[in-house]
Image (cartoon, rainbow, N blue to C red; front, side):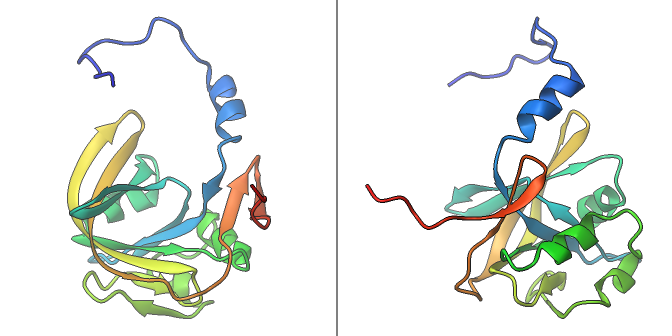
Length: 178
């Protein structure tokens, strides 16, 4: 295990083009992260949602500092995560679009319900839903890492996840035999 040294930087520089070419090859589950705020409720498609701890239960979400979602997510007391089913690529596209409405209006085209503690929107029909209260916020380059304490979960559907890989949506194949 290595520890970063404050103020130190790697000697070799990786270009943005190289980084993008490689990063698209990391398969990721697709989620919609939503934060209920005053005055603005907002959501985004996210593939950077990761479990941090089981005891206490925590997960993290990474959000670009240049997005509308950044202010909503870092200011809200809590947020929700809806892990999308492979049947919900249209939901992912909607919340990834910069031309969608802002605030509560971006939820008008789908069925949703408020999360039990944070009140943030949860997508009905999602593979699973998670309700979090904000635990910590950490700057990380051009993104911010928001850590949430998980206060409620629901595995609502027995269906496969929506996967994003190499700039396209995919469905998991049946498991390979040993």
